Amino acid sequence: MEETAQQHHDDDSLGGLGNTKTQSRRPVDTAIRQQRMKSWQPILDPAYVIIGFFVLGAVFVGTGNYLEKQNSKLAEIRSVYDAYNATSLQCHINQANANKTCIVKIDVGPQDLHPPVLIHYEIKNFYQNHRKYLQSVDLSQLQGKGNSDRVQSLCVPLFKLGDISLNPCGLIANTFFNDVIVLKSPSSIFLNETGIAWKTDVEDKFKQPLGFRKYQCSSCDDVDCSCSSYTGGGPWSCKEPYQYQGKCWLYYYPDEDSTQYLYETYPNIINPVEGVLNEHFIVWMRTATLPRFRKLYGWINQSIPANTVLEFEITANWDVQSFKGQKALLVSTTYAMGGKNDVLGSLIFWIGITFFAVGALFGLKHAWKPRRLGDPKYLKPIKEE
Image (cartoon, rainbow, N blue to C red; front, side):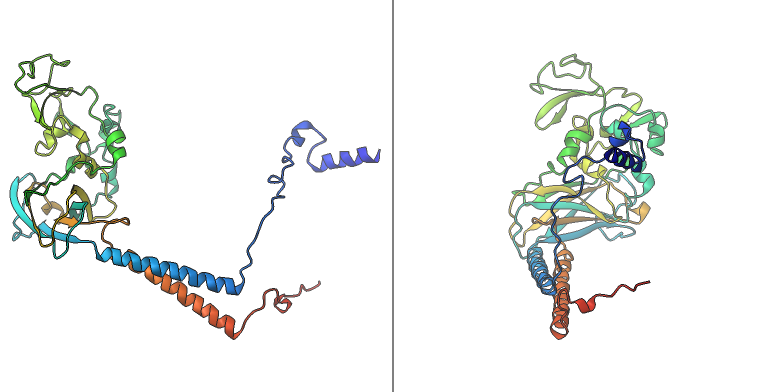
């Protein structure tokens, strides 16, 4: 009887009268659910804390010193070739699509450059991080799924030119950096412009428009290699076969009468076979976080001897006058931690020095007036009420 009454009392204390639903909410009787897991809590003994600060200091100072040495071996040569109101610069233009050709020479300096040697263009005072600019894009369109139902609101203000629709639309795509950079000298050095975009972007984020087709001809002299033929599943929208990568191609874009595609907007950079898969365009579409930024244009997979003068021919089309900006060309090398950075190694080094200083202060205090671990004199008695 006593046992039954006690059990009934326990059931009531659980907020129920012994019903199954209430009992089912009781935690499972396991070590982790009932908090019976074995644990270990470190005791911060002063000696261990002081030693820990000195160990961390040694690690940070050593790492910072190593990074500074590696950084000093890197090269970064920068040449401004156009800027706001800088009429003295050979590449200066006053309007977009000026198609002005100029030569920029860069001396690599007294050290050999080892591959990969990176070629960047740098832009100053251009805000790719502006909210309106970032929002002005139709991601569905870039993925080749066709225009979304909200294409007009997504791509404001650049979704149409009169009655002609833009594909791709939006501010990001239609402010594409369209200067053409060609390495003219030395002729023995090749500027590679592939492999500059993220692999995931090339394979997943960008696709040709829905309905796009292309066909590789066996030969440019082939009688069937004609834009008016139905070879390869025509008809084709080209006027004549396009030569790309040493091959002849036929291509088809849907709704060409009412749509302006990327290769028509930037004919000097984007070819109709690649379209939005052009890596320069994909690099541009990955927007920058700061108003001064650089983007990879190409890379050189050869060693460049010291004091070599690289001669670049630039066709200037991208205007910086309208936003008081600046354009520069950079030649640089890299290592495991990235490009040249004069702050990173120094910052880590001085963090290590700080650890040493704190460890030394704690050590002096402990030597002068030590505190014995577990000394009862530091315990405060509980006042009885």
